[in-house]
Amino acid sequence: MSMFKRLRDVTMSNINSLIDKAEDPIKMTDQYIRDMHEDLEDAEKAVAAQIAIEKKFKQLYEEQEALVNKRTLQAQTAAKAQNVDLARRALEEKNAAEVKMNEYKVNYDQNKAAADNLRGKLEEMRKQLTLMKNKRETLVARYNAAKAQTEINKAMTGFSTDSAANGLKRMEDKMMHMEAQAEASNELASNEKSLDDEFASLNKDQAVDDELAALMKEFGKQE
Image: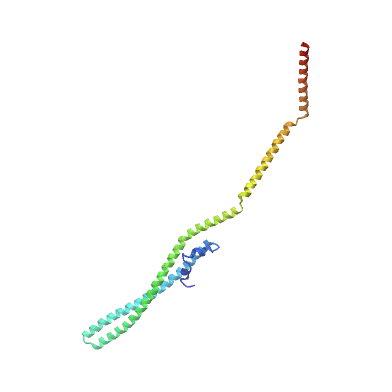
């Protein structure tokens, strides 16, 4: 894996689609965060190495620049003293230092540009990692809400209002049937008389008949 592959492959623009395809989005998000941490550490090392190269060429360039300035002043001093040989030697070293200085300047500029580019990518990786961490809590909430909704939907699938209503109607019909049976049982119980009750009723009716016959007989004589 290249150093910045994670930055290219995992961005906030496509992370949602990647997570949606995952079996466990939260675990996948945590794995991406761990991977990005590792990539960030590798990138930081690479940037540090590039900065070290940049600084090295800067140092070499500045050393040769200082030498050029020094030999230039020395050549001028020797020329004022009419010391041709010394002035020549100073100029020769100045020219050689200028060649090296220019080479180091080119290398310094190139490595500085590369280091600046890596610094920008490193900063982008840090931003992506921060965004990922901040978004994780939102993803957790969304995942839990979706999971709860799925569980509710599963429960609702097995729950039929029609079947429940039909079941309740059957229970009501059964209760009405039981109540009707109880009422009929009470009526039968009230209509059924014991043997003693029958004789008591018979004696009661006979007493009324006897009393009525006596009255009729008494008033019949008076006429």
